[in-house]
Image (tube, rainbow, N blue to C red; front, side):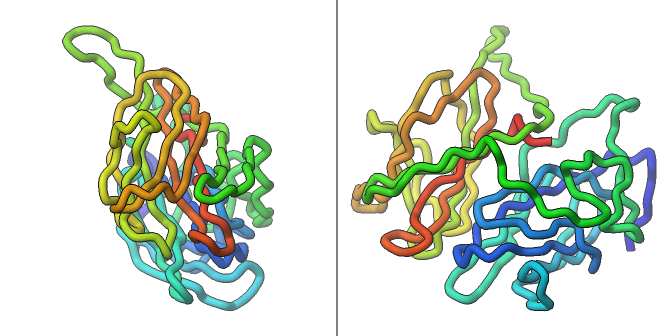
Length: 271
C-alpha cells in the first residue's frame, strides 16, 4: 500500500509502446486506467506519482484482453516499455533520465493511490479523468524503408530539461547525450556505429538499454549492424544540439511487418 505524502519528491513514469503487433493498448496502475489507446511507436509524457510498489497491467485497448502485467517498485524516474517476442508481451522497467529538480512552488501534484485515473492538477495533455486517447504526435517524421537502409521516425514532444553537469576541467562543455534501446524481437545483439566507423554501442541485446554517451553538436548518420558487420538499418540526419538528451529506440522486424525502424525521442522535450 502506498501512502500519500505531499512533501515527498514524486517519482515519475512514462510508457513506450514497442509491441510489434501494433494494436493500441490501455494501461492500468493498481487497476485504474491512466492511459487509453497508446499506439505502437508512441511514448507518453511523464506522469508524477508517489514512490512505491505498483501493479502495472496492459490490455488491448477497449477490451478485457490482458497482454502483460507485473509489479514494480517505482522510485526516481522510470521508463516502462511494452515489448513483444512472438505472442509474448513483456513490460520492461528501466531507469530513465534523472528526475527533474522542481522548485517547491512548481512541484507537480502527485496522484493519490486511491485515485488513479483521476486528474489531480496534471496537464490536460498528459491524460484526462475522462481517459481521452493520446493524439498522434504532430512532430513525428516518418521515412520509408529501403532495406538495408530503412527510415526512422522522430518524436519531439514538449518536456522539462534534466539536470546535467557538463563541467570538465573547469570548462563548461556544451555537448549532447544519446543512448540506444533495442526492442526488435527478430534481431540478435547489435552494434551501433557512426558512418565514419566509430562504434558507440557494442552487442546490445534484445530489450537492452545502453548508458548515455556524449556527442558533440552536429548532424550524424547512425548504422545498426549485426556481429558480422552487415548493415541492418541506417538512421540518417540525426541532429544533436548542445544539451540534447536523445534516445534511439529500435523497433519493428527485419524483413517483415511492421518494418524495422528507429524512433528517436528527444528526452529534453517531454513533459
